[in-house]
Image 1 (tube, rainbow, N blue to C red):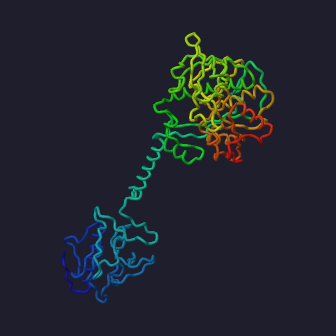
Image 2: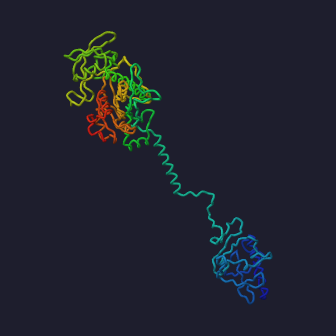
Image 3: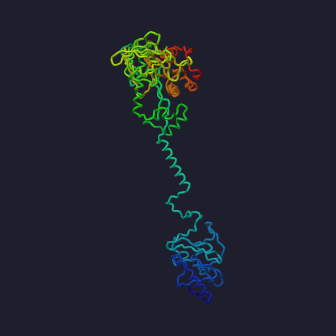
Length: 529
C-alpha cells in the first residue's frame, strides 16, 4: 500500500477521489482488497472493509464530504443511517454513489448486486467483511425483508428430502403394524370356528330339479318351507383359521371358538373328513326315507348286518362283523322276527339295560342263536329319571340293506353330516301326503333320524337357530335332547318346539300349519318371542 501526502486542498481532494474509485473498481472485479501498487487512503485506527474503504482526505471547506461525480464536491457521510424511498434504512441510493466513466454508481457494472452493509467503514463499527464476488464464496444477500426481494436462502438444498426422527418412527411403526396384520391373516391357529351356515328348503328346487324327487308313488303340491339348517365349520385340515377368524368368532355372539381337537380328531386328513361327512349324509337320507315310509304305514323290508361291536359291551365275543340279525327274544318273552329296524328297536325300547336277550343270526350261511346282555344308552344308567332315554342297546353297529318300495333321491351339494335327517323325513311325508302340511308357514329344524324314526341330538344348535332366524323362519323344531343348549339362545321372533320322534315332529308341523299351537311342547324358557 502507498501512502500519499498531499500539499494542497485541491490535490488532496483529487487524490482521495482517485483512490476511492480505484478501490471500488477492484471490489466489483472480484479483488478482495487493495492491490499492491494502487493508492489507498486509510485510517489505521479504523477497521477495514473490502466493500467501501473509509476515506480520510477532506476537501477544503467541506470536511467529511465525498466528492460526487457531477460537481467535484464531497457529499456529507455520517455514522447515522439514512432512510430510502423503499423503506430500507441506511442504504445509499444510486444518485449518492460516485459514477465511473460509464455513468454507473460506484464503478459497478449494470445489474451488479449491492454487497455493502450500512456500517461498513464506519469508525468503531464491527467488521462487515464479506466474500461477495470472491470465486467459490457464497453469495452475500442483504435484501431479505425488502418488498419484492427474493426469499432468504437457507443452507438446505430444496432438492434433497428432509427426513425427521418423527417421520422415521412413523415409517417403522407402520411397517411393524403391516407385518403384524399380515401375520394375523396368514399364520394358522389350532382352533375351530363354528358359525351359522346356510339353510335349505327341502320342499324347494335345486337348479331346476326338486331337492327331494319321488318315483313310484304319487306326490302332492306343497307350500311353505321346511328348512334344514347347517353349521359352517372352519379350522380343520385344509381350512385353517387365523387370528382374524378367531377374534371375529370371540366377538360375534352367534359364533363359537373351540380347540381344533374338539371338532376334528388329531391326525385326520381333509379327505377323511369329507368322506365321513358324505357317508353320514347318505346314511341320514336312507334313514329318513325308511322312517318316512314307515310313518306313512308302508312296509320297508331290510337286512341288518353287523359292521362293528362296541368294546366292553355284552355283544363282544357273541356277535361278529358280518352277522345278519334275524330275530330277538328277551328272557321270558316271545321271539320277534326282525324284518326292519323298527322291529328291533321296538323290542329293545321296552327292555331294561342288563337284560339277557337271545339274538338269532346268520353267519357263514348258517343260522344260530347267541345270548347278549343289553347295555344302557351312553351317559345313562338303569333306574335314572323317566325323562332320560328308555330301553337298551345291543352294543353293535348295524348297516341296513333296504328294499325300498318307492325310489326317493336327493339333489343337494356341499352339505354333509347326519343332522338333516329329521327335515328330510318331514319333506318326504309332506310330498306323499295330500294337502299342505305346513299351512304356508316357514319352519326350520334339525336333528338326526334313525331307521326307527327317533330324533337324535346334534351339534351347533345355537348357530342353527341364528341361521334359521336370518333366513326368515318363524318356527324351529329342536331335538328334545338339545333343549339345554337352546334355553337363553333363541333369537327374538323365533319360536322353538321340542321333538323326540318323527311322529312328534309331524304333529308339530301340522299344528303350526293349522294355527293350533297352544299345546306344542317347548324347551322350558326357550322361546323369547
